[in-house]
Amino acid sequence: MLLALAAAILWIVPSNDYLFLPDTARPVAPLVQVQGGKDPSGPGGVYYDAVIVRRAKLFEQLFHFVHKGETLVPAKAVNPPGVSDSQVRTENLREMARSQDIAAAVALKYLGYKVKLESEGALVDDVLGGSPAAKAGVQPTETIVSVDGKPVHNTSDLRRLISGHKPGETVRLGIRNSEGLRTAAVKTVADPQNPKRPVIGVFVLQATQVRLPVPVKIDTGSIGGPSAGLAFALDVLEELGHDVTRGYKVAATGQIEPDGSVLPIGGVKQKTIGVRRAGVDVFLVPAGDNAKEARKYAGPVKVIPVESFRQALRALATLPAKH
Image (cartoon, rainbow, N blue to C red; front, side, top):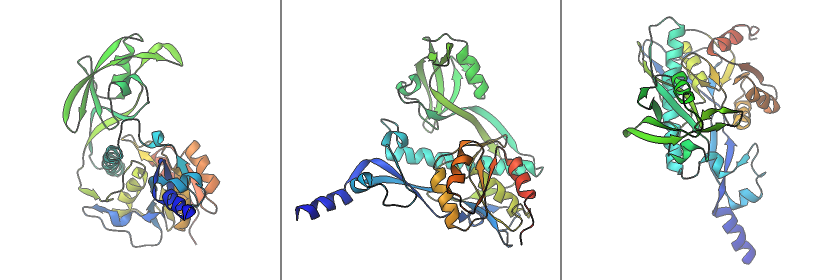
């Protein structure tokens, strides 16, 4: 009885760690609607993949090899200290919404449409734990719009204005979030790599307002995160009659930026396993460590490293004819 009770507790009670689990890659086309376009009907198509993230049970924490392709991750790597599951979920959904807008803009701009991209500040992508920014309450998905009252239009403005200070001095950040504008006083520290350079401990992206000439709707439901941006951009072209996959099943992952660059993402191991499960032919992955990791688990799937949207299109265009 005691053994049975202990086993039940281990199986039911959640631990402090998280599990990353693979999910099967799925076609993008059913999620995307472009005015004047239609879902491609030929063979092949664009696929996206997600990672299942959930709290591990105590049993899974102790025996975390029970699920194929899983990775056990410390809680602090998923939820920064003081940030709840619901807050992380909200941030992930905002990242997904941004990736959809940027993906549509990049694809339509490539096709020659007049797309308006207005720079609106430096979007906080991540905050280092224990950094001055973290202590001041700066959160991912917030946008830094000023430093000491001077406007920040882009990431270069932020770096330039902060670098005008000496390490140890305080900067006043104007921050915009869903609740409005606020000000945060952040004491700079010396960059460990360059003691003369002041830093505050944030990683930023370009905050951009997108105005599309053609309505594009992408509905991913409850799936969050920015990593499907490249897949969305490729499928917008497919919806408008451009056969970019040429009969191949093409999975794509990578955070896409307004200039078309493709940034690294997390969960590559699980995504690659999900791609294999779907019988995908080609997997487009951000170049560098992401591509190296993908090749470990890709099996027969061809992994193609890419750094930009245009490079992804060139790589697909040069694949041998599909038999």
